[in-house]
Each structure stands twice: as structure tokens, then as C-alpha cells.
Image (cartoon, rainbow, N blue to C red):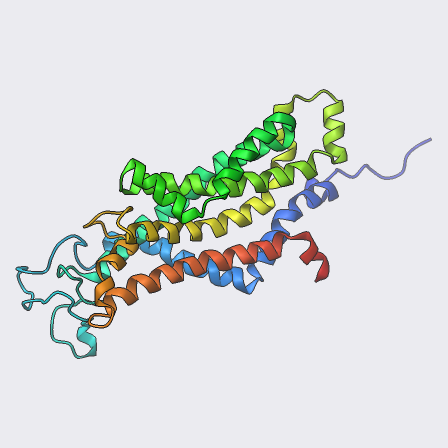
Length: 317
């Protein structure tokens, strides 16, 4: 029997299976861009990332150079308030004034963005990698190994995070590297417990049971089937954790255990000016406001991610 017509070629760009596979990421991105908190947080963070990258172009002075004796400068006084020629000030440009050592505060704030963002991201990357690994192993293996890992995490969580970080830095000595290590160790239990809880619920799912029945090795099951599906709460916590790391790094520097003078770090700048809150408020206001705005950006982005990625909130819309 002769067939009528010709066979139509299959068009992959209209394949429903491929369309369904590409939709989750696109839908998540669209929902994220429609979330007001996430958009505001991304705008704030994009601004600080730009400042950190373009710091040599944005800064008006060397952040470590004192203005005393610099040619062309009106004899400066430490703690001089902000001076902008466009607003009628006839002295050289110092948008945020000078600090206690007659250094340009604006340039120090700009370069401090590099240090604070680097510390926040590095601390989270360090604690996230170790914490997720420990939580993944503990949740999947169970038994005595789970008990040993989680009891160690419980001991770390029993101490207030800042006090534990202070103790670690005190033992190893002050400095940015030791502060980074201390805060990273303090945050490990948060990611370990969160990952373990996700693994415990995922390893009993039917698709994991099917893969295990097919003879897949445990390492493959953990990395390719459980870890991928457990990343949603981890992503939200990691975003919020960067803001927490920035605050704790500034707190250690404020106590003299983190960045050391003359490093342009926001917490260290607050420590230098803590006795001049009323006589020179700009020395405290600008570093404090910058820390607040940075942490606010990460918190808004984290809240937006939680709203977008939480399936319960998706179903309620």
C-alpha cells in the first residue's frame, strides 16, 4: 500500500522533552528578576563588585599615603571633615575627609571593598566545601561515622561563633589569614548540618533507591544524584553566609585580631575612630554605613533566592 505524503523531520528545537529540561533554570531566573528583594540585593552587590574591580581607577589617592607634606595640599589636619569643591570647598578633593593619620578616607573605603568582599567569599567557599563534604558523608553513611561527625559539629556549635573565632585567632595570632581561617571553621557546622538534613531526606527517595539497585557506586550516587538536589538550601545559606562573614571579619578587625594597620579594612577603620564618634563622626559613619549596605545586599539576595527556590512558596503564588 502506497503511503501518502512525506515524513516530516523531527525538529529538536520544538522537542517537548528538551523544552521541559531547559525551563527550570529559565523559570528560576525569571522569578528571581521579578523578586523585588533579590533585584535590590543584586544592584547593591553589583555596585560593590564594580567598586572592588575598578578601585585603582575610582580611588582619588593612595589609601596608605598621608596627606601631610604632599605638594598642592592645604596643610591638612587629621580628622578633617569631608571636602568637595563642587559644594563650595576650596581645598583639595577629599569626598569623605581625612582619617586620624591624614589619609584620604574615600580611597581607604574603596580599597576596603576589595578586602571585605574577598574575605566574605573566601570564607564561605572554605566553610562550604568542608561543611558540605562532611554533611554529605555523615548523612549518606549513617551509623557511627554520622555520630562522630555530628558530635564534633555539635561541640563547635556549642560555642558562640564570635567567641570561638576570637579563641582561634588568639591561639594562631592576629592577621587576615588567621581571621579567615577562624571564621571559616566557625561556619563549617552550619553547612554540615544543613547538608546532612537534606541528604537524609533525599537518600530515601525512589530515584536514589532505583540507582542503588542498578549497582551505582556510593560516590556516584552522592555526587550525581543527591548532592545536585540538595544544593537549593545550601545556595540560600551561602548567600546569607557571605554577609555574616563580612560582619565577623570586621568584628575581629575591630578587636585588633583581624586586619592590622595600615590595611584599609572597614572594621579596622572603625577601631581606629571609635574614640572620635562625636568629634569626628564621619570617620565612623562611612565605614559603618558601607558594612551595613554590603550585608544588606547579601541578605536581600538570600531572601530573594529563598522565595524563588522554595517549592512551598511557588505553590502558594
